[in-house]
Length: 188
Image (cartoon, rainbow, N blue to C red; front, side):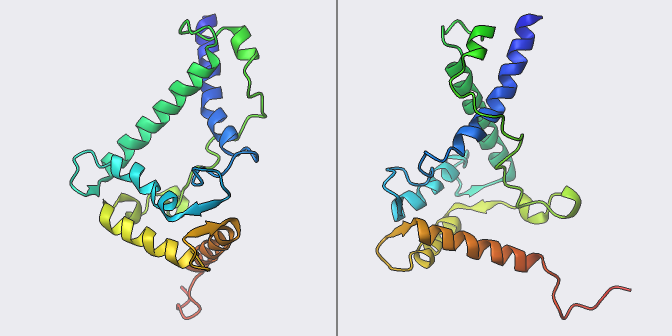
C-alpha cells in the first residue's frame, strides 16, 4: 500500500514538475535552442519537425488521431524522464527519502497550466477547427510567412522584442475574433 501511495504521489509530481520547470525564469525559451537570446529562422521552423514526426503514415498530413497519439507519446516520455530523475538509486521505485530529496522542490504548479485550449468553443465543447487534418506543407508555408512578418528588421533572427510584439499582436487578433461584430443583428 505504501508503494502505491508513493507511486501516486510521484505521478502527481511528474505531471506538475514539467510545467514548473518549463516556466523557470533562468531557462532560455525552448524555441531558442542555442540560448543566444534570439531565434533564427531554422530554430523557428524546427517546431515543424515535431509536427512532421506526428505524421505516422507519412502522407503529408496529420489526422486528429495522429495528433492524439503523438501527444500521448510526449506525455509518456516526460513522465518516464521525471520518474528516472526521482529514482536516485535506479531500483524502479521511488522511496519516501527519494521523494523528499527531490531537487526541484518548487511550489506545485497548477494542473494543466500552460496547456493550450485554443480549439475549444463555448462551454468547453470542441470546435470543428480542432478536428481538422493538418497539411504539413501548408503549415511550413504559414510558419515561414509568420517568421518573415515577425522579423521586422529582416536580419534573419527574432529578438525578444520582436517575439513579444508578435505575441501581443496575436492576443489582440484573438481578442478581436472573439468580439461580436458591431454590424451583427441583436438576437431578440
